[in-house]
Each structure stands twice: as C-alpha cells, then as structure tokens.
Image (cartoon, rainbow, N blue to C red):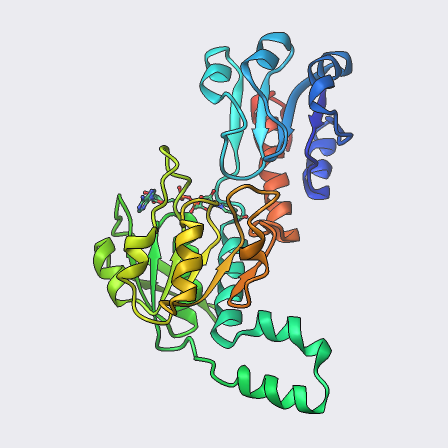
Length: 321
Ligand code: NAD
C-alpha cells in the first residue's frame, strides 16, 4: 500500500503510516506528470496541502485512487463533490492548526501594539542619535490587557484566539453568521475556565472594539467582509489582524485607512495575489507581515500528519492495535 504525499507530510505522520504497513512517498510530482506518475507508482491515494490540485480529470484518469487527504482546512484545490460521487474518500484536518494560527494572531497583536515589527526593521541602522530617535518614535505603545477585542468569524480559530486573548486579560466579543452559545475554554495552570463570549452584531463590534481579528473563510462571491465603509466606522487607532484569507479585508481600503490614521496598525499573514502580494502592504511601516505561516508550526504539522494517517488507516480498513 503506497501513499503519495505530494506536498509532504510530517515525520509523525510517516511513522504512523509505516507502522501500519504503508509506504509513504514524499517525492513531489509536478502537475504535468501527476496522473502518469500516480498510476505508474501504484499509489492507493494522494495527500496534498494547498499546492497540488486534484481535479476531475485526474480523478477520472486514476482508477486506483481510494482517497484524497488534505492537510489543513480549505479544500478548494480538490473537486470534492465529484471525487465523493466516484466513491473516493476525501478528508481534511480542520482543527489541527487552530491553536497555531491563534498564537500567530496574538504574536501580531503584541507586535503592532508596540510597533515591534518596524522597530526590528530599523534598529540595525541605529547609531547614538538614531537610537534616541527610535526610542522616541516607538515610545508610544499601548497595552493589550483591558482592551476590547472583536472577533469576526467565531469558528475554530476565532474561538482559540478568544481563549488566548482572555488569558491576556482582554475583553472579548464576537460576531458570526451562526452564533453558538458554547463557552470558550481557557486553560490556566491546570484549571479550565469556561467563559461565555457575548455575540454582538457587526456594526457594534466595528464601532466599539480597540482590536479586531477576522477568522472567516474566503467568501463565496470573493467579496471583502471588511471594506472601506466598515473601516470608516471603526474606532480611531484600531488594531486590525487578518490571518484568515487574502481578500476578506479590502487591501486598498486598508491602505487608505492607515494613511488617514483610522487604523493605527495592521497585521497580515494572508494576501490577495499570493505569492506576489502588493508591495505597498509588505513594506508599510505600520503593517506587520508574515508569509502565510499561521499553521506552520512543528506541533500543528505533527497533528496534521497524525490525523491524516489515522484517516488513511480507517479508509483502507487496516487493523492496527
Ligand atoms: P471555521 O469554519 O471553524 O470558522 C469560520 C467561521 O466564520 C464560521 O463560524 C462561519 O459561520 C463564520 N463566517 C463565515 N462567513 C462569515 C461572515 N461573512 N461574517 C461572519 N462570520 C462568518 O474556520 P476556521 O478553521 O476557524 O478557519 C477560519 C479561517 O482561517 C479560514 O479562512 C481558513 O482558511 C483560515 N486559515 C488560515 C491559516 C493560516 O495559515 N493563516 C491556517 C488555517 C486556516
């Protein structure tokens, strides 16, 4: 039983699969050779992240394919409905990376509250006078404790972000198309607190929050959830983070809101036009940026790999103790 992990898989995932008797191939096959390579390799299924596409053409041409596994959340690179209609098991690992994304979001908030990302860019050039000038420039930070964080999209990552923010003493509210009354768990020093987060409407969240983090999927019509009108209604000096998907915040409107001072600082892990985002965003001194690494921690990748392996073992009906 051979598995093609075309976009890679963690060592933990490989170990679990090998223990169950699978051979795991992590040599990437380029798109133009994928169908031929899959069939020639005698694979029983394919694992992908966001890079490799598995479309109807490949599904039709690969009769040996029993499963398609996606390490991560979105499955827009796979023709899921068609694959399932052909009896192929399609699965992903939606919860495995939530904590890692939430930690990145908090890292960005801590950074932009003090301008750390920009201070880091500039300190290399600081001589005696320059040091003093930078000390003055970056000496106007704010604390997060006591600030109000509004979370738009209160699913897995939104809830995990709330848990971290509560632990830092922030006041949290949420807006979601489908609000749930399930409390958020905050684990501190071996104790678990259950906190009910108030749901508010979008207008109230935007109007009252000092910090806003967005955790919605890319909207079906591609529209931005936060555009110029929403930004105009925000508190002056708001801090804004997007670690969801490029396009859920209107990037042009964000640049204007930064210029006008409405948004004090922003942080972006995701962009329109990845992997060639707008340079004006990447180089802006009041935007902290990272290259879509929300889920890219060793722990999350291990969880993803292990969860993929368990799914393959289930689909292939392997009996392991
Ligand atoms: P989820 O499905 O658990 O939660 C999304 C929530 O958004 C749902 O509760 C849904 O009802 C809500 N929602 C959808 N559209 C909305 C709207 N217009 N207004 C208000 N609420 C809306 O998803 P998740 O696992 O929490 O992931 C959230 C986002 O994070 C996704 O876009 C995902 O692609 C992204 N993500 C990014 C990274 C990264 O590396 N930065 C990693 C994983 C996931």
